[in-house]
Length: 266
Ligand code: SF4
Image (tube, rainbow, N blue to C red; front, top):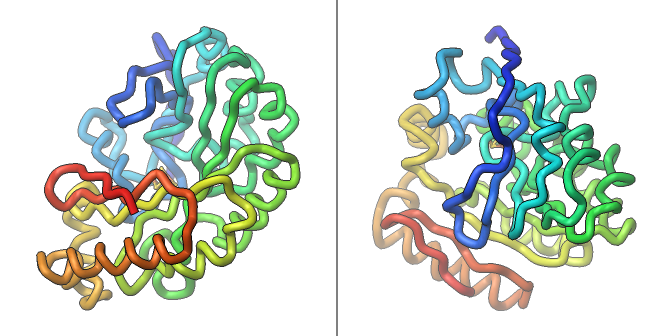
């Protein structure tokens, strides 16, 4: 698959968010080179003339200047891209956005890439900042089929360790939780000393799209059954919840999308 980069000038970079508990989202990139097969952000392809998800990235060239604004409330970076996807290594757009951003803004960054370690010096200047890493334990065949291009989980955990050593607040976003594939318990055991809290999210099958649903059905039949058979699904949620409770970790809850959006408190 080819890959194209499109440069644009944006009007604004802070967008009011409908995500519960999040006031603004900021996306200096739209689109993502990591091209995870389940990515929920692929819906943006409907409004962009560029082609399929993972084959393009739009760059908001003037994002650093637009980031100067002081906004009240929480700001999440990024919701429809990864701010540390490979091209950030050369472009340093995220780094410039952070440098220009009003340091009073309450910033929360979510990524899958250890490249964020490069910017620790700037992160430390913020009055309030946290870094989340998405973890899902995919390895080998699962990883090749589901998210082949992302950094290995081990490197993400090492990055969490470094951030926590630097006294930067961290969290683990355990997502997507796919029955029989995502080893939630081992992720918690490996990271509980490295993160301040957890956020859990069970795969949103409808947002992941028809192609991903087919991939799951054809390659991971048991997982697909749990996701689609009502009783199996709720038994799975119950077991997951009990396991999280037993481990006694600090969490916002388990996000599930089976009947619209629900947040179950463990
Ligand atoms: S890293 Fe995040 S934004 Fe990028 S493709 Fe994967 S899920 Fe989507």
